[in-house]
Length: 112
Image 1 (tube, rainbow, N blue to C red):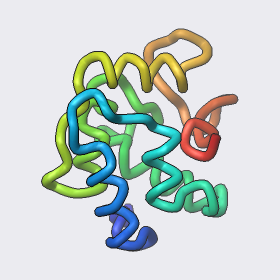
Image 2 (cartoon, rainbow, N blue to C red):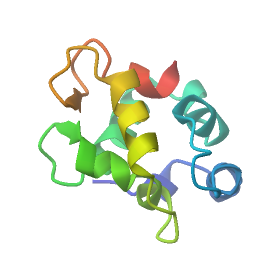
Image 3 (tube, rainbow, N blue to C red):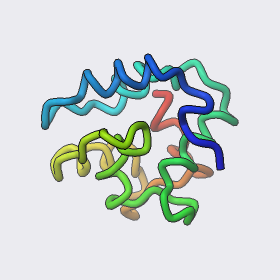
Image 4 (tube, one colour):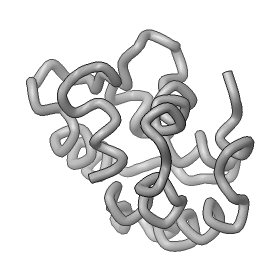
């Protein structure tokens, strides 16, 4: 599995992390736009999904979302419980508590 830094620009990652340093400031749409995911191919979006999917289950669960910023940089902060739940609610349209890459919302959570 490729590391995110293999296909994202370090400056873009840092800019995005700086924008969400304060607790309660995480907005997944803004963050993913800042790191350049909106302009990526579906294949690269899938690679990002796989990097965030720490247990390689094919789904991103709530516990993995809490640590999503650490997927981009080791010094990324943990999301608050409220930020984690808001992110999950935005991306989990079938209500099963997880986000799948092959489902309706999978990669689109990143590019919307």
